Length: 476
Ligand code: ARG
Image (cartoon, rainbow, N blue to C red):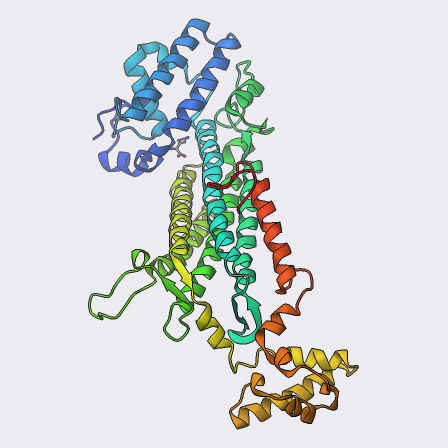
């Protein structure tokens, strides 16, 4: 049995069954919304006073009471009553304990339906900004690492097979741009979240002469939602946000996968610090990339949050349905998980060294400059398909004799095609010449990658607010 009196108890003659009370309650998970609930209530009650809907003195007393309550909750001088049904009831119960019956004027021209929609929109808008800060911090780390590896080459892959040599700077910046899109998607989701539901009442609007524009302005919303039914029944903003977070997690998971692979003895392309890895309880030699593995795993969890939300909403008739109380846990979990993974991956990357010598070793004898040989023949006038064929035969001969392309002499090349006469065999078959030759826009050539580094620096410097540790001048 619950002890807190129900604020809707008027028409009921029996107490709620204890199990049913627990089943209905959302306080265990929606309590984190109290700062937004109080902010929303202060804006609402000020408007009620200004519009003459309740006495101005009561409006002022309630706003003051709510402000003090927020201060007390923040420092632990007050606590939400654990047996309240939800955060809205909990706040109102505390306010009533403090102010007496005048607290009862707060809920004029309002319903928990427009109240909860307002609370979670405020929460989402704040949380997006906090997540974006973490995204940008990770971008700054990637950029700092990228800047140190302009001369480090590794085998770029397609089909997880060695394809063409690329600069490590180029490879790392790929993740930088993925995160830039995540940041952008979050801003986009935030812009559609930025609309006020309050004033919709339970669903149909209210009989009181309210001023929604005032409340929107006071709470910092760009606009008021034009349709009261839509205001209380829409959860698109939560779905869009978790969708953006899912894509972000997919990116973190891909980065994780590469770090896990590169950390295997077979690759040995990275060395993760002892402070960011863990050991095995049975195999003394193990140093496991748990941070990357957990991040890869947690991507699935955030996808689950997204599918949960989509499924929750798919069959709901207008307007509010109690089903929608189930929106909070997946939404909160998606933010908590993404934020945690962003911080952990940032720490992991800051404590990971890239092993240029191992990457160079992987490029030896890997045929990743075969395209350069074909391109050379094309520049001498041969159609690309014939060039491809000639170099393919050369690769087959090397494979049969156990050599790599870089072992070929000028004469070996000429034996494959007369058109190689005069070519610098070492420059043509080596990975550095190959990478340096790719100066097309967005390519892996030295100058092209320098341009890209500048674009990345400019991108971060233009953001508002600038990521942690980045002054107006950008990274060094
Ligand atoms: N705890 C509820 C939720 O999270 C608040 C809205 C309740 N509205 C209602 N009509 N019972 O959705």
